[in-house]
Image 1 (cartoon, helix red, strand yellow):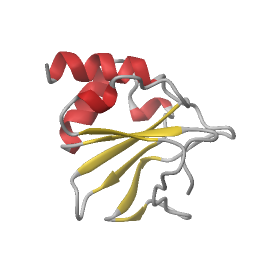
Image 2 (cartoon, rainbow, N blue to C red):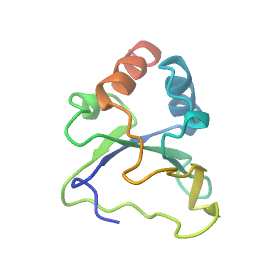
Image 3 (cartoon, one colour):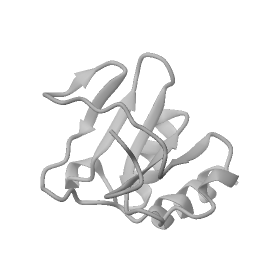
Length: 112
């Protein structure tokens, strides 16, 4: 899927760092925020965030912003595969998106 139009994605490595940041920011996947994981190759977490809200994320080691011109492998059914596994699939349309700045602030605390 093309990133950067309705949403950007924060790619966070390692996966456990991303889950910890989400938990500390109060953005648990249990609340319906779309979160994907690459369990097979990259050990990376992908958090869908509002476009243009993740400024400064690229300055942190292991963090990338996937915006305009980038693509993200997304499952089309169920939980997906080990390479594109929904930890929390979108529950609404449009999906509930986290503010990237909120996630980035927690990542800065965890990975100064």
